[in-house]
Length: 461
Image (cartoon, rainbow, N blue to C red; front, side, top):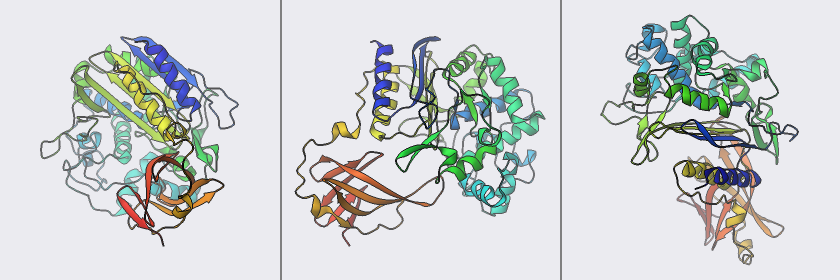
């Protein structure tokens, strides 16, 4: 199969249909099979995307934080099974070890970074530092959610704590430690830990994360909805703020394979799923066998060990996938909100399918699957106000006609800012009395004076 042509076709179609704006690279045995760039680095469409554009990595950063911890374990300056309180006595939760933080099994409350950084930015006009995390935890007064090791709960705060441990154990700033001990030995010449909202962008090759707001793209740090979280969290470390290129991520893959930074044995520790107290793998789900140290882990019957991690921030999606045994690597970096979620998902899944020697489904937007020339005679009956379900983070408030098309007003609770958002979107017919929306996978079905979605039935008011 011609993987180069297939990936280029998928990326082009995804870009044209609102599912991709960024760069990608796929390599086998260190040789690049496919790479490219589509779109723009800015919201005004004046800076074309280039293959060497530099992207924020979001949670893909966690593997670098974990690698730094492993180097300090090697040097005897950190110990995986020592309680975090031994390094930071003011940390309020006993029994939590470095290993627990690495595998998201600490049992801490599910702290939201946005829940405390945004108020500080608003009220104190400053971006808090990562060193303030423990103070925030203490001042919250919250008790542990469970004993360490009982549950897997993915958390950014745990990796902020690990970044602080790296600084204390090494006696060096987190940014400098990773540069000297990870990025430079790996030959990652364009990679570093940066805080671009606080300190500015070091070069014009840095992309802007762009969100779709009021029908147009704006930088996420200027967004009415997201700026408090995006700017306020820019002082954190460990969970985000590695910036890199597709070429540097290939260099990282080769450095790991050639043991330039970590030995094969050290990597194997990182690629081993954490264990819960009941013996089950931490983070196991339908996609992964578990979560290790900054990596999702899967043992594939055909390709052997595969490790990966995704990253996401408002206006940003990243993906890094290593076929450890088969010697393949896939990198996807995207710095603009999708305008069509189906195109985004088809592209994402298609690139992974091609990397796994499978045919990819064609990239399709909702216009491609919508019913052509639908019968609109019943649509006025669907219009009206609907009851709001309790304790739901998404609800349809009203359905109405705009011209010949059906539209909806909805209310959603945003995970990052924990506040309600008013949404208005067109409903596309995808079946008999069934409709979908462009920026979500939601399927609505209309019945007798009611609508149904996500197993919920809402009657007309």
